[in-house]
Length: 407
Ligand code: RAM
Picture 1 (spheres, protein in one colour):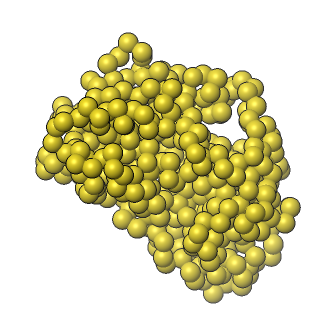
Picture 2 (picture 1 turned 120 degrees about the horizontal axis):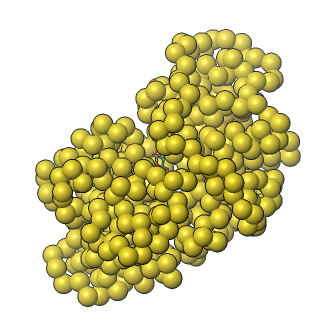
């Protein structure tokens, strides 16, 4: 697939608000991309059915670097693993994806245990919950298997660090701004990348009833989505929204399963209480958009989506009137690079003594269209560190045509 640092050259918009680039001292090359994007329906490797064997002795060092997404079959996870595997291949390391069939903590714990018993060099994981991993993570530590979380964080007690795809505060706030602008019929302006001006202008002239926002999230305990929702609530507490946008988000959870997400979107439709739905998950946004399309509903949808999955619901040309589409614009980041930077963090642990302590830096080799990048671990204020490796991008009518078949 094309690497997304080409976004700038192609007119895609990166929001570089405030803290977004803090800690990221990397540079990006502008070399042309060549490979094709994966089909979003591409099958992910099947989860292993083998039972856990928690009493097995620690295996000898070796094995593969294991990548575990929340579940198989999620296109976001498939693309991230492709980036991870590509970087590992570049540095001559073996890796495998081991993601469960269901988006549950228990299913991940079983597969982690199995991987540890078999022997693995490292574990890179997007978690399904914030508790329930202690025993198996402690087992990993006792076997010197470094844990790096990505997308959805693992406990600071066990991980080396967390690879954050883009500033949590920016992702949360920008989704609210997008939702409010969309509810007010204001289109995205690439000159206002973080949408602060757009939302202010939209609200300044808004005189209607308070706007109601629904959130169709992943799991109720999923760390990454809950982090973004907390930032959405902070954004909504700002004065500019007072009296114009209901500060209470109407939250529903689709567990990152298309069928469950569809059922929850139908509930929003039937209840008729919200004007716009933010779905901070690629599974949820696609399900919500399809439900609203089928029902020919006025409820708009935005959030975090893959252009390939969202194309049927979004404008794709400058001539389009964005307001007539279910999803006028939405956000995401470079998913493939996120996987590659995760692999780079694991390699820094393995080869360069990177421990993830606050202030430490690690270097990612030139990869794809990216030049060599250096990232710094930063205190997350919760007993752990994060490494910020990306920035949010907005997909809108001005760039969807270019990217719908590439990401
Ligand atoms: C989904 C996952 C993931 C989220 C993306 C945007 O695929 O839930 O956690 O980061 O969407």
